[in-house]
Image 1: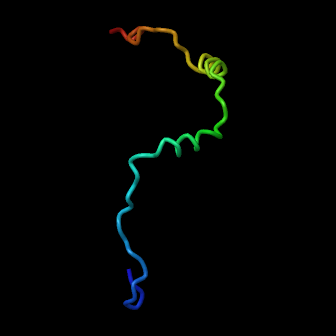
Image 2: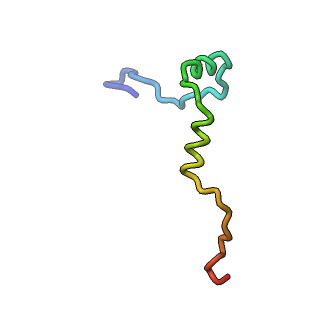
Length: 61
């Protein structure tokens, strides 16, 4: 890209990392809040009906 023939910028593809170093990933999650798995289970049990049903019941199939 140029302005009045003078180079202004290079336009090229972004090189993305495929690997995040372990120490960097640990640093990101170090300040994450703790998860109360019992609370998660209660929330899931409240929101999700896990009763098994016949999907064809009442369809005449």
